[in-house]
Image 1 (cartoon, rainbow, N blue to C red):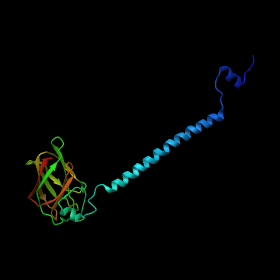
Image 2 (spheres, rainbow, N blue to C red; image 1 turned 90 degrees about the vertical axis):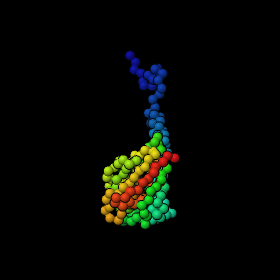
Image 3 (cartoon, rainbow, N blue to C red; image 1 turned 90 degrees about the horizontal axis):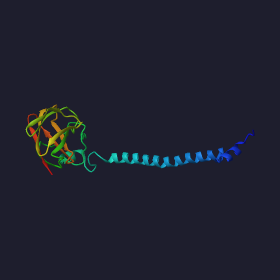
Image 4 (cartoon, one colour; image 1 turned 30 degrees about the horizontal axis):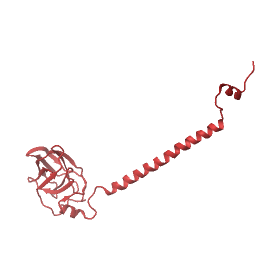
Length: 198
């Protein structure tokens, strides 16, 4: 019985020639091709992250055109983020207690109200009533915004319970309205926010 060489065997079976060097080049090309696709994806991802970081620096916060005293003195701001602290001390910027009428783009008859201490955190306490019914018997105001769901239309009442010095100052934001309202209240008195649909 005659032995066939590898080349003869392949020809007889009509199999393609196995060329190890050509196979290596083809593998390298595939690997090179994969790298070519990864590079633009990595660059685009890095660019996207950089853009997100830059944009986050410009969002939130109060307007750079006005100082905190002016923002609070205007009483209403569309540029203050929920939970933002404007002062390092208990300062009311000379504002007095006031009632507000708020027009919101209601979401099927509901809206949210965020409330927080916009001054240095001194743990003042308030009570929140909606249409005369208490929804928060005692809320301790901190620099972290507390969220309350409210019906639209409604009347929201913020009643002062405890002043730990410097007056009870707070900010109320209605995200559906995109505005923040700055206010003060004394122990035993209250502010009202008449919330109406757009």
